[in-house]
Figure 1 (tube, rainbow, N blue to C red):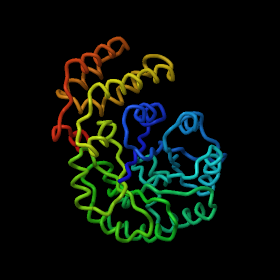
Figure 2 (figure 1 turned 135 degrees about the horizontal axis):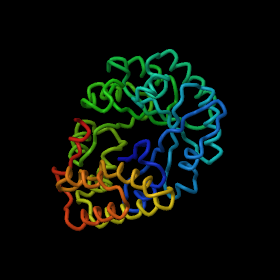
Figure 3 (figure 1 turned 180 degrees about the vertical axis):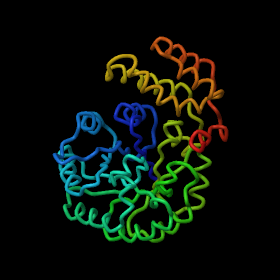
Amino acid sequence: MKFYFAPMEGVTKFVYRNALHAHFDGIDKYFAPFVVTNQSGKLKHRELQDILPENNQGITLIPQILSGNANDFVNTSKVIKELGYDEINLNLGCPSGTVVAKRKGSGMLIDVEELDRFLDHIFAAEVTKISIKTRLGIEDPEEFYKIMEVYNKYKISELIIHPRVQKDFYKNTPNLTVFRQALEMSKNPVCYNGDIFTPQDYQRFIKEFPSVDRVMLGRGIIANPGLINEIKTGKTMDKECLKAFHSELLREYKQLLSGDRNVLFKMKEVWFYLSHIFEDSEKLAKKIRKTEKMADYEAAVANIFAAKELRSGNECTVNQIFHK
């Protein structure tokens, strides 16, 4: 099985990826949060910084593009290729209302004919290999059958399917019935993405889909950085390893960002997910959220690592925070 780390805007940029890679094994590919294309083809400073090879040493990184214009996609692809990348991921899965309104992300699934024209243009350019991360459609999973017919016309390096429609956002449950049919229909390699938060989730999935040889995890890893190792070995994450991961993450954000306020904002984003691997998670999350000064934050975190234990086995679940 190949394990991929899904991108999450605002959380999984290079500082986070490097700390994760330094302290936890098992991720075969990291996908960067999307680069938004423009007519110039130039990348914004923060987008460029995130995918610079020198900021991603020792990991396999796949840059991702969000675009609704085929020419812009091609021009941006050329810039990314010059950095040394031979594969780019096309984001057709982002469910954000503002993104969809611009016919980007999963908004491109609204018009299947336009999607076909877009793909024809970017694949004909042959700049790099192209993988696609997709949803099933906008409102009805049945939309995916026509979408799959379009995908099958192109040599997609990997088709990463998140089996929800755009209107679901991250609610409801993945539609495994349609995923099974997509798996049978696809002429391209298929990767599964969606709601693998625990080793038990993973075991249930592979029991139902033994032929799938690659899965993408996102929120599950952010909530439990040791998840893949737990899946592979059955061993619960060591708290000292998690503490070392946190320490490196905090140290690198202090060096990169200006002012405690910005660092605290980043760390609180991480703790929104991470707190749920500890006992008394709601109380811990509240304590972290209330901190306004770095000294108070560091004291709160030190107390957590000293006094609280990690949840074990079936207790270690984050489903409740993703399906409210």
